[in-house]
Length: 402
Image 1: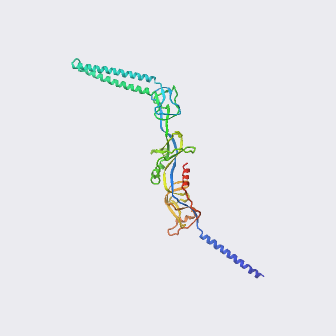
Image 2: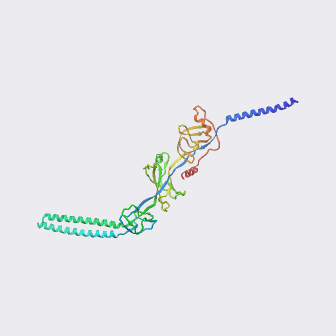
Image 3: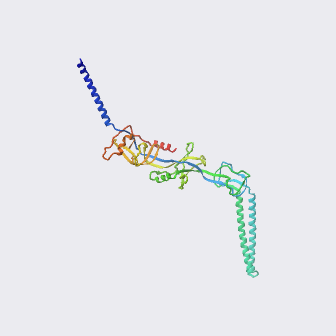
């Protein structure tokens, strides 16, 4: 009876033993052949627009401080405050009474001087005839000639005084020297003003076109200039877009008028001036704005997710490239130009069409110290390669400079 039970239990035990042995062998074999799993990013050629966002402040293209050039009482303000005025338009009338009197006196002085000069000339002619008959001495004639010249000089002096009086009389009318917008008047009718006073009567500003002064760190701006035509192709024409503080965009682009190469000693910045059309008067002097300047374009640019680029002990940028046979290549001395939205713009070391490993990098550290005769490491690629489209890049650029 016991023997029969033993015979029945023996096949079950053997089957269990075989099953356990098979499982152990399966686990051992699977563990031995399992490859590190990675995901990759496939490099596609893209057109990269190099944009920078700078702080800016609006300034008028022309500014005229209206000051009196003669002293007197303001009789009349001849413009509407907060309005547009034309060049040559009368703005103020200063009491001209004293200046009119001075001018009239100067005119009379000129007439008197001319009369004296005429008498002196007649005397000289008469003396010339008397000298021929020896009726007068040479000394008397010479004195008459000198008197005639003095009379002529006196006419010139009187005419100069007349011109000065006329200029001062004209200065009693204060005109606008430029076309532009005039704000409030600092004086009212009846106010006493002085020639050359420090406080202007009003301010005329030309608002169309209008300038936006932008500031950038001198070191960065010099780097942009060095990279021009080397890293990127500079843009031509209107390359500045303007955004207001509420986020709205100005309808018309502007252009860089000049860049000041004098560095501010306090801030270490340089000033770049851009010019915008402002026919509608939406841009006002003194406003703080957010201009975005397009420096240029990098054609067929290579962008790689930043998690796929690491650095070694020497400070060099490195990457791990997945070859077509699923082996890993450790690549060093990669050159990066700039970063944007989680991507690096790579200028050297990675080529179009290559697949850069972006996850699973911790399992691949052994390739960094592999010897030349070490067989290349194989990995298992999971999923489809990641990609960056031109539309996605454009959106990243747009959002990064806001």
